[in-house]
Length: 219
Image (cartoon, rainbow, N blue to C red):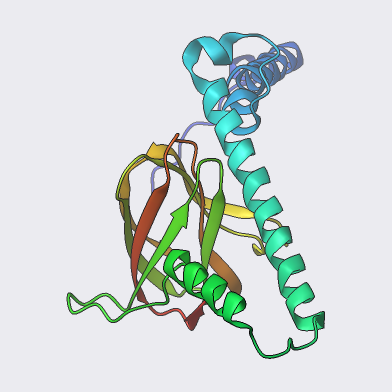
């Protein structure tokens, strides 16, 4: 067996060279963190380089979508708790019936059977600046295939879960001013995984989403 010659002491880097290399690597990492990671992930741009490269806007969108999704989730939970705590109402009057009819016309649709092979199809209508979401109940490793599109205008979107493996929110993808998206994702944890949309256009937008996969339910 051939044994490689061991390097001589003279061929080995000196302590001074190792320290210098470590310092250079640390400086490069710090530059990347400040100029690339902070702007693109968190919208923080202390040097101004991120805005020149278009990274700061990307980070600001990510942060905005995450904040809006968290706020909408909290509002949904609060509304659900209020509904549970509210007593049953008396029989509706004719005026109440008329209001209910108007609400039914504008309400979001329940899932429908899609003959093209999709498991569930939903629509959500969003007024300007309004946000809405659809969540799938999934187990780790479950896979969902989806497509969504709008009838007019455009939407910002965040496909995410609020309960990742580390207990924090995790985003699978985010988008800005989109009209249609299709894709697939695998659940990284147990719980609710799905879409949050925000209408940043000047017109009312109806989004239609079609889903199939191994999820346990929709909420």
